[in-house]
Image (cartoon, rainbow, N blue to C red; front, side):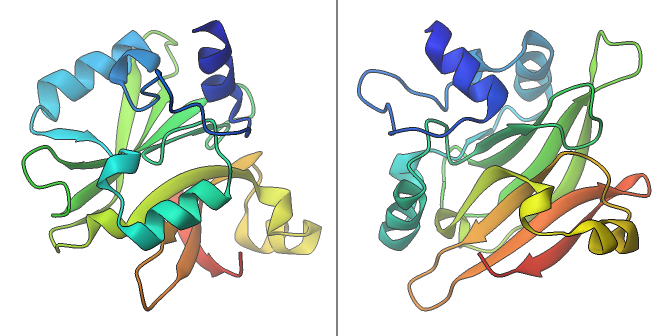
Length: 184
């Protein structure tokens, strides 16, 4: 249990530890996020490996994550506090639409602020997953200055449909999340 929590906290990758551990369980998230999900997003759940399409699952497993395809953890908005990016799908129709949001600690350090980054009502959610990645993998110093991307991590939003493949990196810039298509 401790190893799983540490891996989620630091976004480390290793062989998927799906046997016996549901890493998409909300209990792995901070209590403040659990409460917000329960109160405000009761009809939604975190994207799980079982909900991914065949192509998306193969692509996600190729990353050899020790995480969940619906959770990315990193220093997305600040170099001092970890934030949690969640890809939520409808509990009743997991291939329906999605909600992509980031929970970050408010300045009072006691509660979490939620930012809805993207959403869709189209029936394609099984093709998507999220990952955390260091921004320096995608932006050199001049690009970081150009895009004002000064945090440590970005969020990869991966679309792995059967006949298409695309990756966007979401990053904090100028008080909001921006996105750029990348080769990954």
